[in-house]
Length: 243
Image 1 (cartoon, one colour):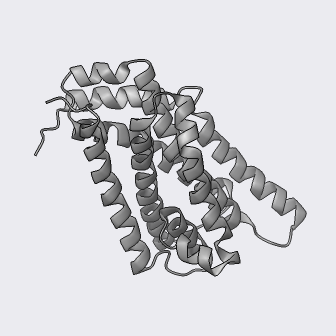
Image 2 (cartoon, one colour):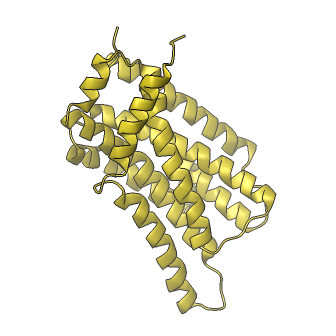
Image 3 (cartoon, one colour):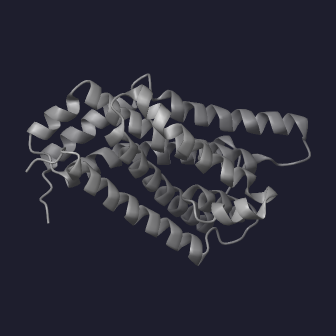
């Protein structure tokens, strides 16, 4: 079991936080917030007798989970490789687990803050039990998206390439859940995607039902474990880990 040094962990988290809050990347979570609010306002003005808050929240969270969690995390890692910040960390004997946790926590915190803010911007209210379900599903989904972004960041030499590599996956993760109600095949596929589980959970909460089924829970846990293991393997295989 590798030892986690708090000094190194704090250094990684500081570097990651500065990168995520740079003007090039902070626009993505900000866009998710603005889009959620705009979608709510537009549909409310068009159909004042109907409540589109849950729909606005679903779309906003899909955008935040996909774009911030995957693209921003991948781009931040790619930027560090461009500026040779990553190599500096490697020469200080940072191990894979330290890098993994230090990179994950700032991104995960940012996603969760935006997720909660989207709830209020969409004008949606939850019961205490609903909040527990919401926080669980969004936290695990955000965790998976961040790890996925880190995996793509390993292969992206720069931010432009990170955008190119992640775009097809972002489209799949966003469009399949959004279109799942229109096609049985898409609905089946959506049930095996973490974004699909998230989208379904928000719909269930809106109906007053339990947010996630046993199948959905297993999908989230399995995808979280697989993505974490894959990142640690690729991190070491690509020569980042110090021996």
